[in-house]
Length: 190
Image 1 (cartoon, rainbow, N blue to C red):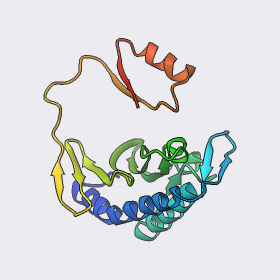
Image 2: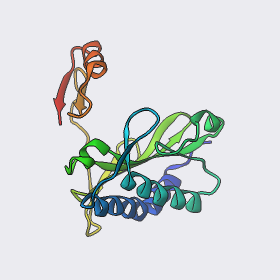
Image 3: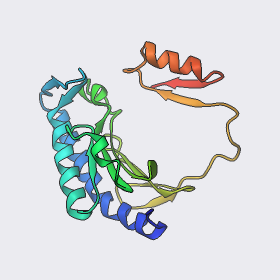
Image 4: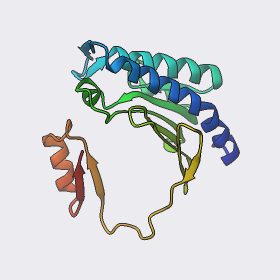
């Protein structure tokens, strides 16, 4: 059963202070000597990834005990959660390679996935103090550190073809092949 708009708004309001806390904890660890180790898939993980993960996981389980939580940093298999109508999916530090390099291009992400589709999401870029969230189609907002909110407007006209933002840390042969398959496609490397 899908959540209604009011329930999704309540979920977002409950998660805003949580995502800020997790992102700020990660940011505070960036200036320290960033210890890096490799996960099973070879991708990097830092103490900041794990600290943010602990904050997000504990808060999500406390706030929404009946809802499964899946994280990039956990060894839990998503298959075990496929029977759930709603799942919270967290990426405690998206952009770990940028974080390690001391850049400000990383974020903390939380999504509510209902019936296999993301319906609600929060993205917090702590180094830039930018928080974005949406609780449904056409309902996207930015919140400043002072708590002010502004609605993000929709594009006036749909794009004729896809546009992709590509991480400079992930522009590899697989990404180039995907961009080629999407042609015509514009992309911007960041």
